Image 1 (spheres, helix red, strand yellow):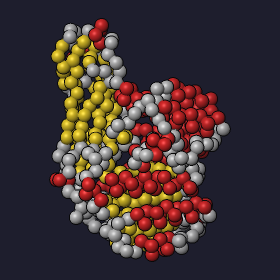
Image 2: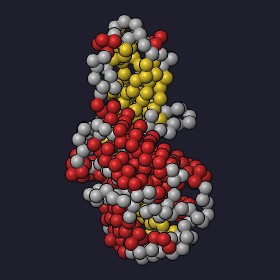
Image 3: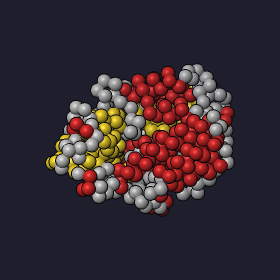
Image 4: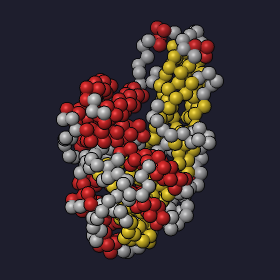
Length: 455
């Protein structure tokens, strides 16, 4: 039987401020890190909730040769990793859609299904929406409420047949996520529409990845599958409450639930940490003019469901800070982790601006923005390596590579699941390789881990 949330601990919520006190008598803005941490995986975690996957492959003419061969290999890797109780379907599309493997329980047929995938061949243009929609139709045939249902969509191009409007596609993807079928996207190479693919992944409550080459696709496929197998909690919502007069701003760019105003957080795997960086603006009227005992500034409550869609007990964390006079406040040390996450989000903002500048071929502005991002990364070796990789693309004036890496890298920084013991001032690729794939800090999102950064 699948594990039950009643027999395993739920997540914890804590709030970590950048400084441990307020400056007495002054209005001020402070940053605080809300950390949502899952427990370690229980011993019985191998008996996980079944998966219900629809794998959708672009087989258009541009996928001919190595791209389609590697896409087939990634799909086969997933098929061989599924448990007998999982369900799967495989759909391929060019200007027409084919259901290559109708929805079925895997059972003992994994190798037989892999042989079917070998027969997918390249064809015409790209009916991306139609292919995704057919995948959803297959996933909807799966068990209701007892399996994690997701469409995994791979394409190397833009939608040029059928529905092609990114906003309308995202709306339909969001509606299916609400109905219980999430979507993750995989872009390949330089020709796909990153705005469309990222938008679908975000709207679909899944993930969004890309590979610069067909060989680079293995990393994101493995990361997605490892994440699905390790999930502890889904549908996380962050509810924030502060005293009247205190302004609260979440800096990650998470979407808000339109009904409740709560922030939508990433799914949480065992042993991982979801997080939100919050900026609090506290008016002088609420800060005592003399040294004073702690005052409550923020309550963070997180709700969510387990893999059986049963509500998990809400968890809360609180932030209370004392007020100190200038002399005592001036010797407080800034928290290293909070400062690092703040720099990470600032660098993400700069990367997105550099991406837009690259699309406008304003390379002088690109260079300026990346130089500023590099200054933000001064005390973070991983972040520094990311920015230096972007600078290499910019130096070569590689618009497509620069644009995609900057955009995917920025999105990753805003919403990544972190290791609970992450070391800010230390980065080594071999140590990252020892982490679970979904916790790794990669220097380039589009490169397979272990490949040297390159234009």
